[in-house]
Amino acid sequence: MERVTITTDDGLRLQGEVRLPDGRTADAAAVICHPHPLHGGSKDHPLLWAVRAELVNRGFAVVSFNFRGVMGSEGSHDHGIGELADARAAIGLADRRVPGPVLLFGWSFGANVALREAVTDERVGGLALVGMPLAADRLPDLPDLPSGPALAGYLRPVLLLSGDRDRFSPAGELRILGRKLPDAVVEIVRGADHFFSRREREAAAIVASFARERVAAKPA
Image 1 (cartoon, helix red, strand yellow):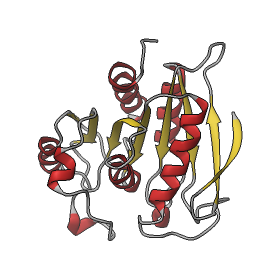
Image 2 (cartoon, rainbow, N blue to C red):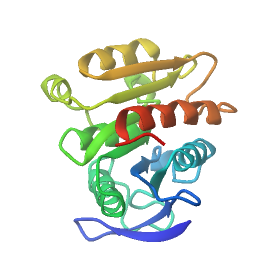
Image 3 (cartoon, rainbow, N blue to C red):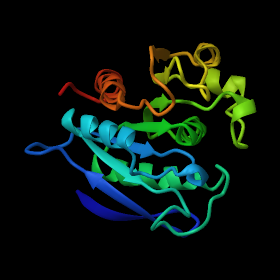
Image 4 (cartoon, rainbow, N blue to C red):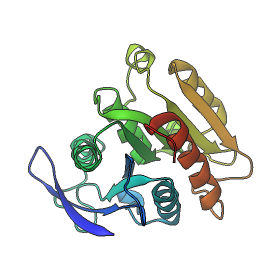
């Protein structure tokens, strides 16, 4: 694991790390966006560890980072606005390490950021979004998702993954979002909650299979 500093367009230094496959050269890259900073979210969580490990095992170079104001990252929480610049800077690092389409992964708050960044960032070759926050009555204020036309114009592959016990990402709402995206697959895991507690490896395998088959340039 390599510890890195990621510098944003607005001059903040973010705490990050890069993990590479053992014994071979990475042929694809991924960036991980973590959950809500004001609710304990950071790059270090069992679900994110599992996703990172599985992607590395499938040949990806994986960039993990802390959003602004989290742990060793400079700045302060910007309610999902400035965090777009954070994701953009991490994508830039991933693209420099392994040129080609980047998988952008986001969980919860990170999924909201990832989708909004992807619709305007051509370097993103596909999205894997877990627990996309859609239950407005149960969530902190988040920026609105892209408009219908913007979603309809996003032609790259998208995975929308949630558990049927996720009270923040109801299956019905997730399927509605999926229908707005031309190339989206919706996966609902029975018995899983918003954190995929004790199901982290299962979620990670779904994400990594999608990433390898739909986003990576060539098979593992």
